[in-house]
Every structure is written in structure tokens, then in C-alpha cells.
Length: 114
Image (cartoon, rainbow, N blue to C red):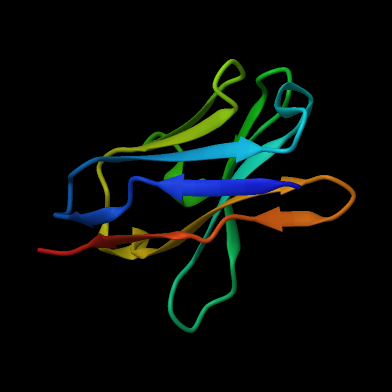
């Protein structure tokens, strides 16, 4: 059974930092592409960053230079380091993996506000 559990969200002021974690189980973690997506109120879920099994990363333009995705294959965990957060980064952040179908975590709320 595939499970993804996110943590690390919270309330932060503009310019602040947060690190999200996603622990996976039931998958051959090291062989998979993992991703972080986000969904703001009234908007569709959108890709934030992905990391391939060999380490190649991809980011949506609005977070380049501020966010870093990484993985620890020994811990079956993918991270999203978010720096210089902006109000427009406010959203629910979801961890994603595709194993014959899409799997999502339960989401973690990130709120950037002064």
C-alpha cells in the first residue's frame, strides 16, 4: 500500500523559510520521480518541483532560486526547502508519486502572512 505523509507546514512571515518533508512507504523510493504540488483557494493544483531518481530537478518558474527539492533514499523522504517565502506561496502543499496511478499525500498548509 502506497502512503505519503507530509509535514512541516505552518504560518510564516514574508521572507521567511519553511522545510516540508514527505515520508513515503510501499514504494521502491529510489527508482521513482517525486514531486511537490500546491493548491491555493479557488485554483487548480499545480506542480512546484519534481526530482527524478537520478537527481534531476525541475521547478516552476515562480519558485526558481527560492525553493529546493531534495531526496534521501535511505529515509524514503523527499524535502522541499522554501526560502524567501511570498504571500503568493500560500497554499496547501501536496507530495506526489506516480506508480501506475497518481498517489497524493494529505497535504500540509503553508500560510505566508504578516
